[in-house]
Length: 274
Image (cartoon, rainbow, N blue to C red; front, side, top):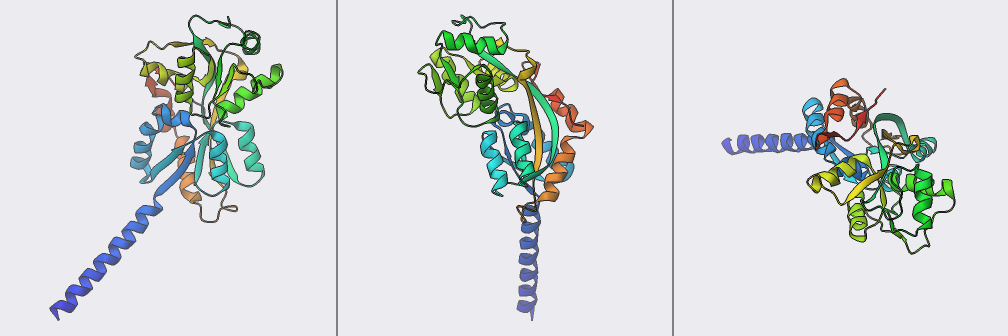
């Protein structure tokens, strides 16, 4: 009889543990995001806050925005945090994503050696790229269909053709920090978002080899948005958790945390959730 009762207790305990494990799994939100939110350390700051406030664990993979969008379409994640507005809206229109919400921004900058061999410092971005092209100065492109790469390509197209067949134009297929490091090694130029540049600057103890040379044009504005994967396209997606994350990002508390996130005393992102 005692053995029977013991077996009942063990069975009940195992059932409870299995249920608890399932409940825990249900509280894990999978996200695809751009490398800048990961490289800068912003998500390492926000994820514990999100878990504390909601009980939901945020897990993410950092890839170029182009790949992140495809992961959403292919039902590989529940939510996206990316920065390529035109591409995002196309995926919304095709029914792969929904509930696009703008949450923060920074800007793109062109960086290069302090010696500035092409003489681009202070020029409007179009003139700067033309000067780089005319001087055949080394330019390192991410070449990975990321949000930054999409913006860079659009800027080249605004002044002519993308110089993808030119020897001085390097497409490396790497994330932003690695691309910056390659540009540094080659004494070349590249384009990055300001947040990642500040992270690179911090990695160099505030004395980086590459300096910001071109900035401030309105066209360099860099918007970040959160999007839920559409459950009509992906029935098993955790849309309710994605919605909670989107709403949480827009709260006053989280928006303040985004604005307060700094390296070297410099703000990396500016909150702008509506």
